[in-house]
Image 1 (cartoon, rainbow, N blue to C red):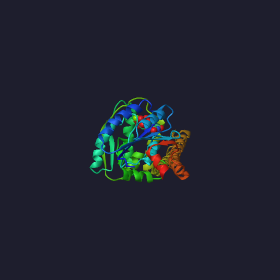
Image 2: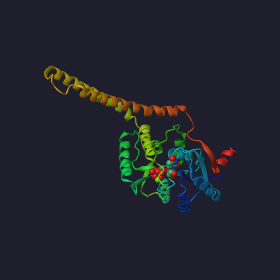
Image 3: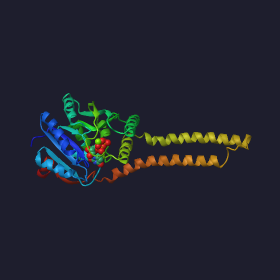
Image 4: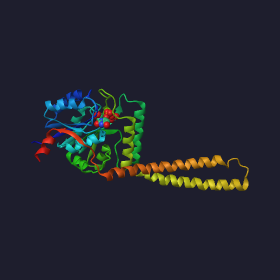
Length: 319
Ligand code: UDP
Ligand code: MG
């Protein structure tokens, strides 16, 4: 079997309105790519008609492969499942909702030919997304850049091209908490950006709820930074300094101004609640890290597959 040159991974969760348009636009792009292409559609436990549509495309087009996860595992894991099964020398990851224009694959491949192992798409703007989303995304990427041990380029998502070499390293990483855009930056090699305008969704609703986006953001920070852990130390020093100041103040009041109305329950109550919340906050941070250690130690598989069709399956059967 000849090795395909370009593998395109697309995670799909309830995208029935987008699949056929996506396939059409991809076909036009694939025609312009020289060498072979394979599509790896990863159904992330969709509850709509997505899987049937994927099966239809698979039956029509020999270049299409699909993996259907046994339940909804989340975007990052769906991409991971795809990465685990690609065979191409060049691997592209893109969303199914056409926010990542497939046409950008062509200049990405050009960059690869120039010797870059990672080419990531960098958003210049977000069309038709709410002010809140734009603001939080803007702030998050800047905070992450300050905190993370590796420099994770701001305003980049998972839309990217990676060389086989990089994908092999990603696949060899045992960690369950997969913040792919961070891991990709961590790997190193020659990386470059292609700026692009992020289109609005072609159809359907956004699949990232606020809770999922929040979890992804926290994951990005916790997986790539130990600064939050140090925060407890800094807060501790700060409250020790505040305590010292209070001791001096209270002594002063006792000795020189016994009638001061500032001494009393109000002060004690404020101090109590302040310290209590600082402590809980720090325990919460510890919890985030410990929870992740727990996840890793359990060593469960990252995902479960209920159905898999295509070249990678045939290879598995043969081997
Ligand atoms: N997605 C997924 N599993 C999920 C949520 C989303 O595979 O649990 C896919 C979704 O189908 C899409 C991509 O991940 O192809 C990005 O999702 P979405 O467009 O909702 O989020 P955005 O990144 O645009 O905010
Ligand atoms: Mg989207």
